[in-house]
Amino acid sequence: MNGLEPVGIPWIVLTGFVRLLARLSVVEAPYPLAELFSICDSWLSFGHVVLLETTAKTYELFREVMLKHSLPANMVSGSIIAATALEHNAVLYSNDIDFQRFQGLKLKNPLL
Image 1 (cartoon, rainbow, N blue to C red):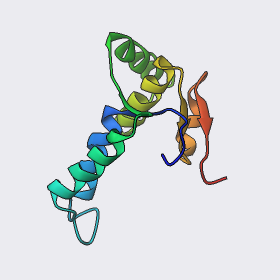
Image 2 (spheres, rainbow, N blue to C red):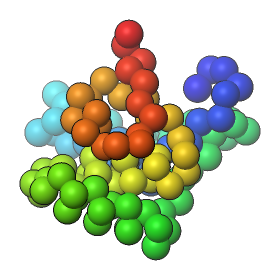
Image 3 (cartoon, one colour):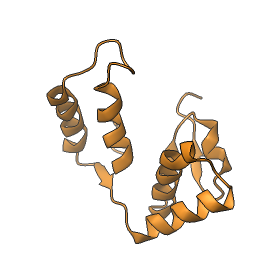
Image 4 (cartoon, rainbow, N blue to C red):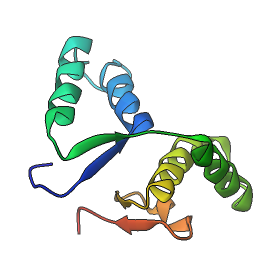
């Protein structure tokens, strides 16, 4: 996010960030909610960072990818992220190889 390239954050990613880092079962020392929201606010304060809204089209793409690939329930969040990126014609930055299954998804591993 340090550059000027547009960055879109799907709602489910932002809420997942807050949900996971506030849980003792996930991190040894959970962050206070106020601190997590402050981090999110700082990301969203950059002019080139936007929340990617979900629409009826997101649902259609989500349903399509879940059914096309006969995905299990644990792939719901990933499928929503993929559907959001597909709808917005965005590049998804992730090192999660599960995203490779989504045809048409522009994927880039930020660790390579």
